[in-house]
Length: 420
Picture (spheres, rainbow, N blue to C red):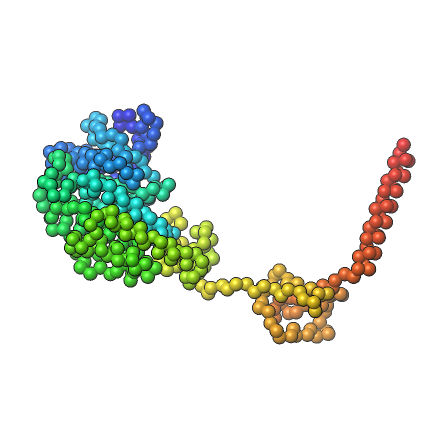
C-alpha cells in the first residue's frame, strides 16, 4: 500500500523511477502509479532532480486537455516517497509495432496522425516534450493513442523570455533526452522548440513505417522512405523527409501542419491497402504459417520479409509460393449428353476441360454392370456414367410401394380386431 493506493504489480522500470499498476481504494479505479526510487535526487531546487522531473511531468500533463494525452489524478508524497497517480493505459508502445507484420501501414499512419495532434495540443499549451520516441507513444487496447512521459518537458513561449518555475529549468547547455532521437540543435546545446519535437517525431514515423532506423540527427542524407519501402506513397515519404531536415527552418511550421500533411496521405495508403486486399499485389504464403497465425497473411506481410510472430513467438519468415489460379468449373450437361451425366469422384482433383476425345477403355478391363468403365487413377479423374432411370421403371416402383402400404394397413386392422 502507498497511501490509499493498493499495489497490484510492477509495470515498468526506468532510470529514475518505477511504474506500478495500482488500485485507488477510495474511488475503486485502476491507476498507474509512478514512484521515485530512493536513490534519486530528491531536490526541488535543481532541474535534474528526481522530484523536479516528477513535478515537471505532472504539471505538463495536467496542462493538457486532450484525448491523446494521459490524465493526471494526483501528485503526492507518502512516507517520504514521491509519486504521481495517473491514468492507466493498457496496450503496447509503437516500439512493439515497428516490425510487426500484422500492423498495416494504414493503422500506423492513423496512430501517427493522432500523436501529431496531441503534440500540437502540447505546443499550444506552451509545453515542449523533448523526448519523443516510439517507446513514449502508446496504443491502448481500445486503439487510442497516448503520448507518455513528459518528464523532460519544458515550457516554451515563442518570442518571450519566460523561463517558467524552477522545476522546469535545466542547466544551461545541458543535453536532456534520448540522443538516438534528438534533433541536431539539441545535440548542439541550443534551446529546443516545437520543431525539435517535430524532428524526433519524424524519426519515430520513419522507423514505424519502414521498420528501419533513419540514422539519427548526425546523418546528413537520410534514405527516402519510399526507397526503403516501395509500398509507401511518395507524398508520405516527402512529408517524413521534410520533418527530418537538418535546418529546422525547412521543417513544417507546426505539428498542426504535420498532422494535416499526414492526413492527406491517408487516402493514398488506403488505396494501396485496397489493392493488396483485392489481390493486385503478388504474394502468397505457406499454409503452415497461416495456420499458426490463425488468419490470412496479406501480401503486405510478404513484402516486409520479417519473421511472423504470434504472441511474441517466432513462426518463421513468409515463404513465397506459386499463386493458385481460379478453379476450372465442371462442364455443364448439354442436350447431347442429357441422358448420361458425368460425375467427379471426390478423391480426385478437377482438371481443365479438354477438347481431346477421352481414350477408350479396353474391353478386357473390368466394369460394373450398368456403368461405364473407370479410367486409371493415375491418368486423371475417375469418370463413371450413370444412366437416367426410365419413366416406366419409376411407375412400377411407385405401384409396389403403394401395394406394400395397403397390405400393412390391412394387417394392422386385422391384428387390432383379433386382440379385442
